[in-house]
Image (tube, rainbow, N blue to C red; front, top):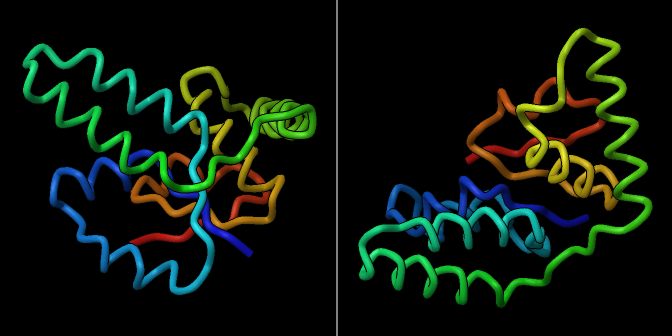
Length: 134
């Protein structure tokens, strides 16, 4: 097993809202993974910072986080994404406003990993996602 960590968790650690020990309390000895989606979201947040000091702080946090192994997005991830999006649509929900979250969920499902998040409501209706919370 492994754990894919949602972007919001990384942000909360950097802001001091969560301590690394809080994360370890949930992940234990399970390997922790990073998604290219999270890298994109964090890079976007850093590049959009108007204050140069905040931009540098965010880029430094991204560099620390990138030491974690990164899962690849491949054909299987794409097929799972398409299936999950279709299932949401069949249930009367649109996948469009939450594409990034659906990609994270697709990776978690693909690898049989739990998805550690504080935004449970973003994932609870996505079939097959194992959600872990802090």
